[in-house]
Image (cartoon, rainbow, N blue to C red; front, side, top):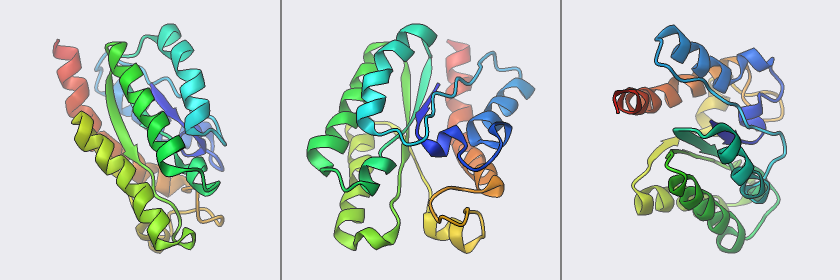
Length: 183
């Protein structure tokens, strides 16, 4: 299951071009016995994800959750400790207590939010990955922009950007799926 925001929901591209859909195609092609449930909602925040998570866990009973939230919190200037980190921490603990594994996607903010805020925001994901010994997937908005893989808003990936995200996530996801299918 992918718990995310507009990046996961495929904002600005067709649903079948979103990185969760591309991952599902790879999983089906390799006949790994898993299906991707895309629980991405455009505009979602860590608070929204935390609110939705219990029902999603109960309804889908995932073996693994790819957690991709926080960007909208950052864009709104939410408190890093009191909101973003706290909510992500609670979601990680909730996912793990359900028996599912967590793959954490490090979210990056555009540079116009200032060096201090953007670095501290990024550090949340690094710290949580280290604290919970999670696999962390980091990307770079700057690199994707330079490669022409972003939509004109500079925040959302275009079709090629989704292909790159799927490729980066797959590198970390495939070994986890193989491990889960063996157990």
